[in-house]
Image 1 (cartoon, rainbow, N blue to C red):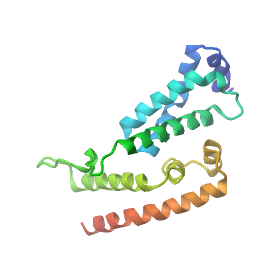
Image 2: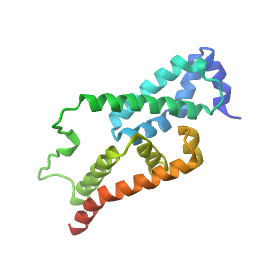
Image 3: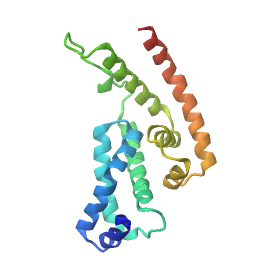
Length: 187
């Protein structure tokens, strides 16, 4: 018995407890999905809340033609795209991001932790250079381990397009991260 199928009609009818169950069943997946798109935990949490607010407001429009998780993922993707576009417009020509400036004192973590943080920053920055389609497929396939079929269902793209986008994303990521990895090997 699939609990989501049982609660969806109740939630569509306005049952807040049923919608709360939907939230509990899907919020972790949606948050991970949004983190993969944004690379920012706080923003992913904020966008998760926005996603579920929009889902609640438009749940009556959900016809069940796709899985509920697919529908939620579509809302999350749209919420993320709007947020990312708005952030691009807000940026100035010269940008100082907090995560690039690190205070290191005598009691700081060992070199390995510092290198791990730098690698995560390099990956985040490299992901930020990808266009939205490539970032999405890279996040879902490589970082979340989803199958091409699942990604196709979530995004509405064909499997061949996803494979092409992933191949191109991997080429860009390798090119951008390779210098970091080579310098880390020297340390």
